[in-house]
Structures are given as structure tokens and as C-alpha cells.
Image (cartoon, rainbow, N blue to C red; front, side):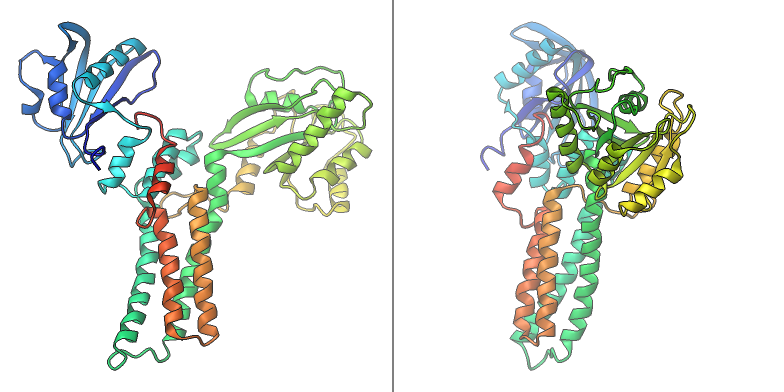
Length: 465
């Protein structure tokens, strides 16, 4: 705790050339350190100024002016960290930012550790652990859905829901413990049935949160997508079509794509981590065969397969092999080259889908050459990966694997409570498993999180956050 009481400083913006850059200090001596290096036009000390004000002046070190700045003053506890905070808005050059930071460090601040500003916010009760994790998600957001979900969690949606469930568990545990301590005045006769009904309801709420984790991962990380198809079906053209630029080499020569090409695509809020792979076919070319094997391997690990079928050619054994490969996966069939005379139509695709127990797979007619079919593909992906209409007013999406694991542990403990009730076990068995669930849920908000877990979470933050 001695280290926590020190004043810390770090560059909080990207260390690169930019219009502005910010050096942040937080801690009990932030104002005094700032006064050592700041010179304002009116000569007043920053420590004498009102909180939440901005002041124009210069940063100086050893009689040398380093930069012309705006200094923002914020007194605790009405700050992000809950401590006195100073933010020095400099010109955004790398060298000048480092010079200003160095001046802060020379006058008593120490370098902040990764995530230490947010860690102090957590330790000072400004946010819980789920909100702290949401800070990372906001920074790393790559699409509208991820950003909205992260902001919703940052405002306390997960914290509120978990607290509601924990309070209900605690109430029932306290009732049982009180009854066991004072059986003459508090009876538990028939309480098992009441408790079972309450626990089953809580289990439903927890399962709903666990089910949201798939949507949450997709929002946060994107959909692992692999484009497969025969050589010359137009896979690379589809990738270029989605990217809006000529990223993949396109030729009429079969087998042009030999290795996996990876790109990130944002389709109106849906993120695709997409891979263009070698055309799948039997081949004697050793290099091409390696590419085919990699394509098949990546297809097995994908969240989504975009199977590109060439509508200008009839289906053949290579197509049948691809159908067999992807029949257990989420898949969208892109019937490409619809601008040409068709030798394969949707009815042909449906027939072979039926042979492989793949009925109901979406088929989207597209023309990469004419850039047609994108709107239908986007809507199809939304319907496939998001359960219903995405809303951030009341819905909660779990985006952390850690939080999902804690929910699963809590659910397992509550299932044991139901088993104990149905097995006619004594009431003290109920309270043991109820408290296990309570502890597991507490690790989500940080109420029961150990120091090692807290350290691990904040070590993933950038230096100035």
C-alpha cells in the first residue's frame, strides 16, 4: 500500500506524432509536482486553483521551456482514479511528450505500471472489476456492437445484474443460518420447496448470461471466418469484394492462392477475421497440396465458413468433398458469378445440402465482379450470429472468458443446491453450496477476487490507462 500512495505519471495517449498528447499524473502530490514544472501567465500556483479547471501556460525544466500546454486539474474523489489528478495536454510529438514526462518524474512522480490508473480506480471503489475489464474492451473495440456492449458494461450493467443475483443468494443463506442458530423462533419447515423455486429462477438468469457469451465473444473478437471453395470459384475476388480493395491476387489460373491470406473486415458492425485459402481439390503439386491441407485445417477451427460455389460450372466431386468437410459448421454458401450463364442454381445446391444433412443453410447469390449481394450477406450474418435484435438498453453480453467461467462455477454450485433439496439433505448443505455460488459470482465484480487475479487483469492494460 506504500506504493499505491505514491504519485504516478505516464503518457496516456499513443506515443506517436499527433496533434496533441497527454501526460497524466495521479496521487497525493500531483498538484505540487505540476507546480514545480508549470509556469502560468498570471503566476498563480496550480494548487491554489479550483478543481475541474483548465489552465494555459508552459512546462519548464532547468530554466528551459519544453512546451506550451493546457493543464487540467481534478481533485479527488471526483476523478477517474478517485485521487488528485493532473493531465498536461501537450503538442503531440514523441520527443516533447517524453520530455514532459521526464520532468514529472524528476520532481517526485514515479512511472505508472500498466493499467495502474484503472487499478487505482478499482481499489478506490470508483468501479468494479467487470467495469475495469470493460475499459480494455472499449479501447480494443473494432466495431459498433463491441463498442456499445463495452460502454454498457462500463456503466455497470454486469455489476448490477451480478449484485442482484448475489443479494438473493445472500438473503437465502442468511435465512438458513439464522434458522439453524435459532430454531425455536425461525422454522425451515417446507423451506426447501421455496428455496428450490428461487434457485431454479436464479439458474435461469445465470444460464442466460452464459448463453450471451457466444454473442459477446463474436462482438469483441470478431467472427473467425474461412473462405473455401474449388480453384477459380472466385474466393479471392470475394475477399477483395468484401475488403473494397485489390488485396488478393486474382487470375484465371487455377491454384493461384497457395497460402492463407488473413484480413480483418468490418461489415456495418459485424467484424470478420477472414481467411482466404487455397482452392480445395485433388492435386499432385506438392506446394498446392500444403495449401489445400491448411485450408481444410482452418475450416475445422472456424466460426463461419463462406463456401464459394461457381454458378457458371456444374457441381463435381470436389464440391461434394467440400460439403462433407463443412457439414458440421456454421456456413453461408455464396453462389458466385451470377452475372454469367448458370449451370448451377440454388435448387442444385439445396439438393446436395440435403444429401449431407445440411438443410436450412443460407444461400446468397453474389457477383464479385459486379459487386452484388453484399447487403443480403450482411443481414444473413447478423441473423446467424446474434440471437435476435441486438439491444443495449436491457440486454447484457458477457465478453470475458473469465466471467463466463465464474458463471459456470456458480451455476454448478446452484445445481448442487437443487440436488441437495431433492435428496432431502439437511439445510446446512444448502448454505455451503449457496456460498460457493456467491463467492464465484463475487469474482466477477472483484468482491472475492484475489490479488493474483487482479494483478493479471490489470497487467493487460496499456501503460497510461
